[in-house]
Length: 347
Image (cartoon, rainbow, N blue to C red; front, top):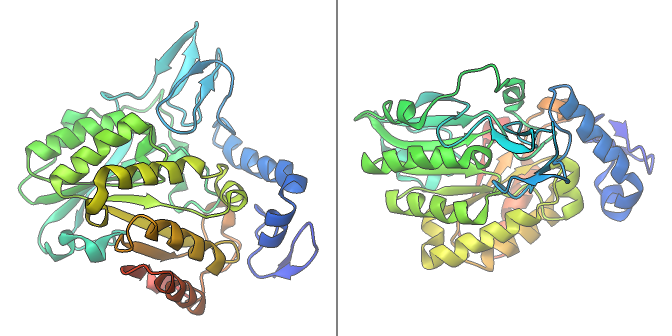
């Protein structure tokens, strides 16, 4: 148990990295915004990363973080910098910073219960973990990618990954970190995967450049894959507090996906939300569920159990009764295909 730094009330979900309760964040956000920003800055600086997207200089445009990078500065992802007035790409469509491995099917995929891959016993998912991200989630379970030193480490070309696609690879999934920050590299791999009749999936925070998103949708749909959108929160104050970003671009991009896919949205989209104790509760899930239903009630929705990680490793797990309440609410709001994921993490 810990007290909120603002209202002084005690809660069982307050972290030292986010020392404010949900009510105070929603009702008095402007009073505590600078302190929340400071927490995010601290969590980034220890890895030598730019605290927030730079706002004055040459426009990158690769993702929704909209970095404008000044002389000698790096972009938020750490793969772009400006030197002598020019934007330098440390990572590009020919240079990717990633780890890959063969993951036996069925695997613990966000969309495993609606994906044909869960029946492909004996086959593999070629998992591509990109070592950069466009968010700064204080609860990140894969935060170790932040130790990446791109100007020292050797990148991999798309061809080197495509060569790893053998007859036992059923699907390839891009995740991370997040693939938004190395989207052009992933597209080159997706092209090769499609040529080899391999299913292409993405698991992302949704902060795509809109033109790139159109390409991503093409390769996902053509291959029979799934584009997995991780919607972190509904209220922008909660979104920002947890991730350092207000979520606006995520909702716009999801809408765009549904407009492009239309009746195929339920086949090629899946939404997930991590049930962060105290912050992502019934109210958040109710509103996210309504948002999803406004496009298609059959779009799959995964409610994921939370386990302590990174800067929020000092709080509890999601309780079983909390997950079950959120599940019930999502169904009450009209969603037809809801699942609680990572149930082994529930307390």
